[in-house]
Length: 275
Image (tube, rainbow, N blue to C red):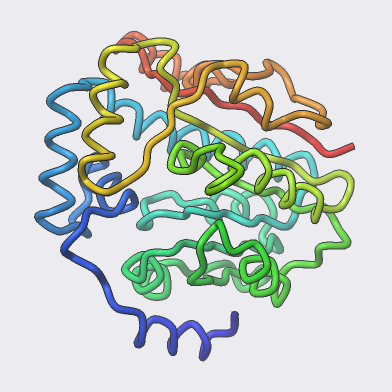
């Protein structure tokens, strides 16, 4: 999507403030101000039944930063981030371009407010490229078509879906996240990377069950996955060490090691390479 196309989408796409949106709920948990009362209401309800969500949101952001830095240091220069969320600092392009200024990054999200803030706040390096697409992860053709304006899919791309997969289920008659992700991976060149994190009920069943119920009552599907279900996303790929692991433990920096003392974060994470 070019700058002018992004502006047209931004200007025309309405923001629905009658229903909570995951990106804006997440923004509230991270201490942001780009959310509405309906988002804050749901965020507070979930926080009341699941005290892990604040550190989970922070842990997800730190995981994204570590995984992207790892990919960039390994030579990846193209990144497609789906389910971007409202910008926080440092964001994916800042991490990637901090390692290699020529890195190209495309952000995609289905909430117009995310696109508007991305246009205003996310500026890449002069050597690289940072673009934004208003698109839903379910619309694979649109996401890939708009991303292809910036990314060369004949070369390796790091595909990032951080804290997104638990919003889609695995019903072949409806959403089929495993099948959908398989199609995205099939579109990537050999040497591409997949960066994922996903809420699980394995580590805190009662709290996550209540959180999922609150999401669903708010109109947002929510699908925690077991270790086996999450690991299925990486079938056919080469998992990087330490494999699939609770998010705070994936190649932690010193601050992540310290954060683990705060308690459980019921989120799995993994990074894999397409052979």
